[in-house]
Image 1 (tube, rainbow, N blue to C red):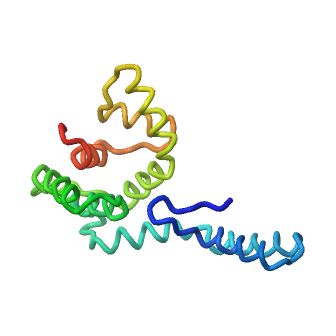
Image 2 (image 1 turned 120 degrees about the vertical axis):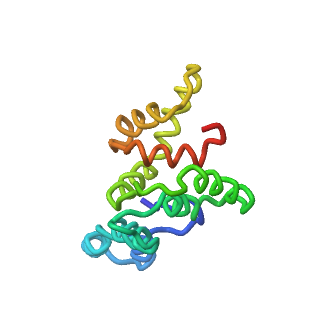
Length: 167
């Protein structure tokens, strides 16, 4: 149950509360009741967190730019600045003047996709081992079958532009 955040090792609020209760020496019955309260309180916090991130990028007509979306993706990537700069340059060049943008729902869908990234990575590894290239339709198919998320073509295009040097 102790779920660590993938990049910086912080634990979630629910896991932290669970740790505190475990070391407090309280009876299991009381711990269970208290954990139910903590889980209920933080149940919607993930969506709230993503909504805050989205609105910090100052959406226009409910959409953030491809560059803002790419910046959100790289915020916790832990990549060197030089590589991030090169990646962002590709996105800025390709989507310069684009008015399409990405909605909050598309951003949240992609975040759910990232939540399942380990399973997605396993599926994509099988594609690669079979000799198939990983292209946008393949990524969308894997997202739908593994993470149960329908990714929009535009979102996938931004992601491929950001992470694939040959795209």
